[in-house]
Length: 282
Image 1 (cartoon, helix red, strand yellow):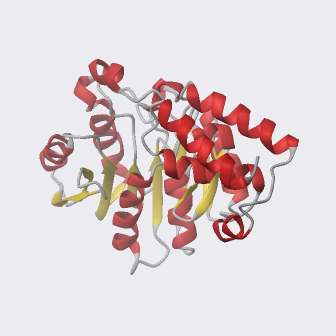
Image 2: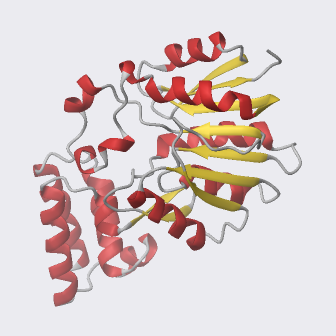
């Protein structure tokens, strides 16, 4: 089987399995099994796959046919141009979350030595990216669950994020020791329990603890605003990723807590994806 034949076969099998982005995924899988980039694949599309590569391709397709996440199969995924280890027990980085990173970077770009907290960090893709894009920042990444915390530590090491530190912690009972932050960011669990049955087949393989939130999806937002606002400097920003149709609810929570300049930004699909506010004197 040639590379070209493998690509077409993979694309068809993915499409038949109900995978919408079959073209993108087929390209990623061929890159993965051959170790070639897009240009090299075009230059060598008539090359034949080795037996090992064909067996690897077959195994990957079988896993995708049962909708096991491609990111877990690869064991890593790119976010904001950098690679992050992922696997069972940690949320997969998503392109939509880059909007939260851009919101945060715009806020801290002119601040010297900003102190940042990334809550419910998971893989660490948000906090690590902020630390690398803003090298004079000091970033603390807080994660509760052991499996996710393991990936968080490995991703800090992988990306040589020397200004990032991982902490085991629970946002419902924070241990802050009087620290103050210029910026607090979080992509917390936000799917209401009644909507969990509507998530994609791939998402069912991700940890429920990183997805489900009580109180109509507002549980974590309320806890973070209540428990961490005291640790945010006056003039500091609190910025969240939010689920579909949740932006106005989160904005109302921030407004009720005294935040000003509340801003909502849309992702590339036009969905209101981030909500941020500025703390003022209470």
